[in-house]
Image (cartoon, rainbow, N blue to C red):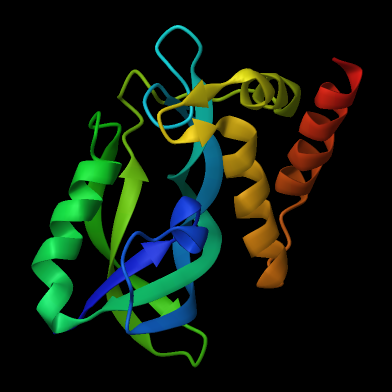
Length: 177
């Protein structure tokens, strides 16, 4: 069986591997949310940033991309993704059914936030914007993560009003500094 990986945040624009196929896909009962404190990639322990995670949302859905991995690359891709995504155990790995744009369903590897982990958070949009605007981690500035993700969602025609608001607000914070 082919290995599929579901991307909803930075995997959209930086999967870190070359997939043999990319398909728009929907994961049901989850949504994309800035609900994970980033203390490695987009922030630090002293000044955490925020990154997206799949958060449980019964009845909700998250539209993203399903990436099919070449059979010869599966072990290397799994190792890479586990090093990248499971760096602090805030995410857990699960295989869930995603629906591709043609209606077909495939099992896809998903990285889901552990709500019991200390990095799980829920902040209002203004707090999110303030944190994102001021945080930098090992993979660069938190605003870069926001802008790249928002741009790719726009390119895919995926409407996310909170993401658009955050982009505008973070840009306004920089103009006022």
